[in-house]
Length: 155
Image 1 (cartoon, rainbow, N blue to C red):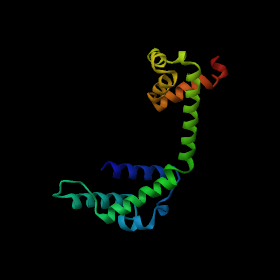
Image 2 (cartoon, one colour):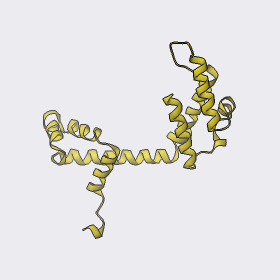
Image 3 (cartoon, rainbow, N blue to C red):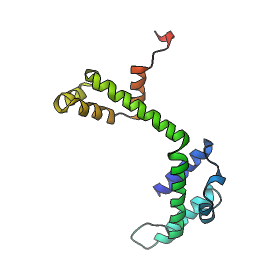
Image 4 (cartoon, rainbow, N blue to C red):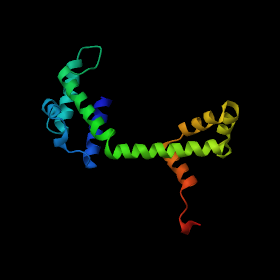
């Protein structure tokens, strides 16, 4: 159920963002699953119920599973690994690299717990543990505070 929900939310998000249109979706998937979001959801949910009823395992029929996998492959090729998503991924990698370089050079500027890890287990370990524990928002805020000048009015 989660895979169905995530796939449909991602398709909806990509359509709202103008990255893809309904007509861009693979024809075979549209034929097997339905011409729009509502039909796709109905088909997938009904198929899971009908195929799984009375069985110990929740599954889809081969036809619906193939069409769903085709949609997922389409999303990877055209949304997840392309265009705006790829650009954002590259930005995030750059941000994390800059944080890594900064804290390896200045480990004393990490929180005390991570300074101890850096002393006991090595700087790379302390820094990587610190960065791995950051939320997206915290990493962005940390990067901003370290590398982006404050507005002149705030000085």
